[in-house]
Image 1 (cartoon, rainbow, N blue to C red):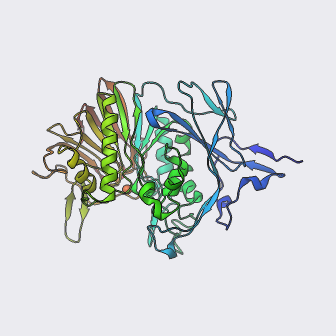
Image 2 (cartoon, helix red, strand yellow):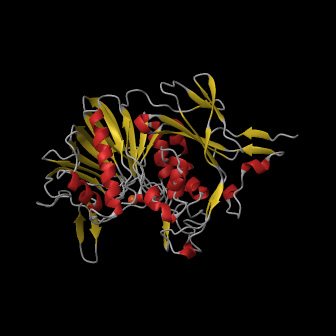
Image 3 (cartoon, rainbow, N blue to C red):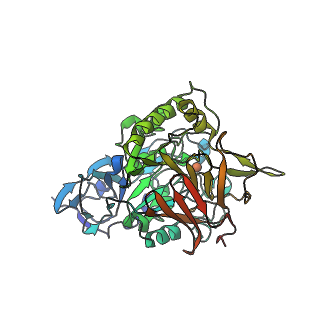
Amino acid sequence: MLHAVRLVVACLSLFVGASYAATNAAPDAGAFDGQSVAVHEQAFVVLGIQGRPIVRVLTTDGQCPDLDVDGKLLSTILRAAPAVEPLRETGSAPVNSKPSVFSVRTCELSLPRHSETASLHGQMLPLPPKIINRIVVIGDTGCRIKGRYAQDCNDPQRYPFARIASLAAQWHPDIVVHVGDYLYRENACPAGNAGCAGSPWGYGSDSWQADFFQPARVLLNAVPWVMVRGNHESCARAGQGWWRFLDPHPLRKKQDCNLAANDKIGDFADAYAVPLGQHDQFIVLDTSDAINKPLPADDFRAQAYARMYRQMLVLDKQVAHNFILNHQPILGVAAEEDATSTVLAPGNQALQSVFKRENPRLFPDNVDALFSGHVHIWEALDFRNAYPAQFITGFSGTDEDMAPMPAKLPAHFTPYAGAIPDDFSSWIGGFGYMTMERSGSQRWDIGIWNVNGDKVNTCHLDGKRVWCDKNRLTGALGK
Ligand SMILES: [Fe+2]
């Protein structure tokens, strides 16, 4: 019997977009058996429950590969086979929707505790150090194509996520945090639009490649990631790919977003913690289905978020200092323009309504800071009266929100009744990334960087307090 001659193209190589062309059947790589075929693989490391590194391998091969872990060969396990998922109800009209074609096999291995090295076909995989001292935070990275709205995905100036990922890798972080919203190519590029011509669209693996895995490649090669789920990864949008590729929990059948009838399961994952090693940790919350309206206590979302809140209350006891990662800012400020003026909007109303039923101050005292995206700007907001600092880093590739933000918040404005803002800093209209470098006990130096790799602002986080050198940055380069 002839065996396939498998040529493993350099680990983490790009998948060729054309090989993902939608067909009626998923192009299972097993069909290549008997032929000489290049196997395309991409491997990356996701940090899961208690920071456990999970190696994920996306492959066109018909089987899951082995890893070399500390000199021993260990098999990766199938997480999701190639498949064509029938069209389900989505956030788009049926005419702008299609079945999701997943051409690649997702394989995974949760590494044994205390593993020191892991490699795939000779290529070393990034593992986190025991103490995390350097962190890159990015968010909202996809290229938006929805209805008639189309970002120029083909122009690296107007869609700079690949450049940002490359610059972030050159900073040599210990880990990367993505605060959510990875996939924005939901509908076809409008006919005649050269800016996005040729882009894949929908929620299958071709869109995931174009919007995330290709532009993020250098950073995925180099650094373990903490993945936060955005509303773009809710079940009615890119939730199928979220579960196949990125969520660190086991993939359970009804939680996979394939059937809209199961979205009440698929839209919610358990909270988990990622230790940072110095009496501090991230707690990751899946709030992908949180709309911006208060939720009555009997709403199923309210019940799910109350359950998640109580999980957070168990996790937060593990350490003295907690950072919360979730997609929609709970204590942030957004500027919204209507026909005649700009108004300031408070934090997410759904999450505030649920959390304040548990605790009128929203968070326990050992939560120092919140890291979110969703609003396509950079922002840092400090409070006088012991509320956690809020950072927003939704500025890493998706078209920016351009409503102007004041240099100072108006007197009496607050993102949450009772929280008194103090230092406030923002950057509207510039793409970039944020860095955090440990500089003492519960002190972090924060850098804000533009697409040229220039640091445009410096902030300091000390416990719950944050302050920045500049209050307001303007322009694409933040000068
Ligand atoms: Fe969002």
